[in-house]
Length: 332
Image 1 (tube, rainbow, N blue to C red):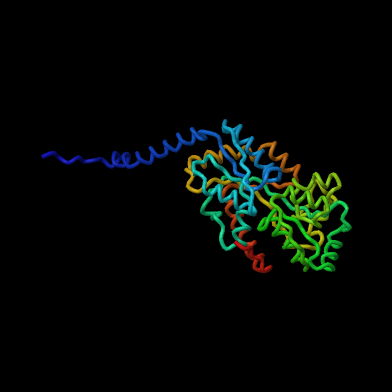
Image 2 (cartoon, rainbow, N blue to C red):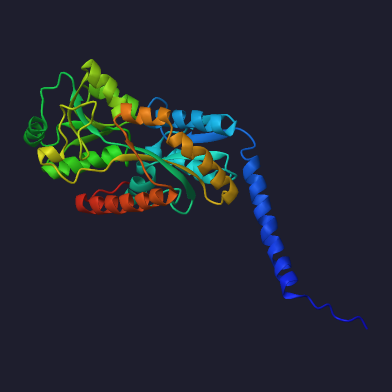
């Protein structure tokens, strides 16, 4: 009869640790080998706008750092829901990223009964990228030269003044409704499929006003085709020092900024997630991106993935509260 093998405690512990060590080694190997091919960054808005411009700067830096090409794939539609849903269903191998926005992650899900993705369950955050204030603009030949004059006209015309946005359920749509409610006026919404066309029609005097992002509005403000009446946020923009903030005009509570962050589909392997975070971090803190952010009147979005998750939840709660107070609900 063969005598039983007596395993010493130290040897038993070593054998127990071997599977974990093997998995860790495999993870290190995967991270070192990643990415294996071209990366794709889905942008849920059309080419030419602020989201697209930001994505292309990040894609260039990420591609240089990773030694792989990063292709920007514009998938516009439905306030960012189309591209975001495509990203949620993509292969979770780390080679597909999404430039997520406050519209698609916090506003649309709060305003609709159902969207084709869950912002928190279907995505893993990589890093926050940037946020931007809004500029309240009117056409350059508009008779309104101040917010007070604009509000007075809106009160006198009861719904005859229209405003542009880059789609139902977007941050631009929501903040304009917040502004109208804060002043006790009604405005008629004219949604577009992207910011470029919306801003162009305001500059051409086809629409009366818009809360636009700096990247889209500043060229028209500089040329005189748009007039800036106010900006959101606590501080004036360095590029528009003469333009007051809404709080300086006594208008409070209209303070949601547009933010952007990088995500991958849920179930993306952790080694790939860690590798992407390591590659993206120096890109987001680079002089190139910081310079672009400053030039556009944007704001650096500090913190890591956890801060991005916290912001999604906070803005979702804020949107739900605003929607309830305004009885604002979008049809699915």
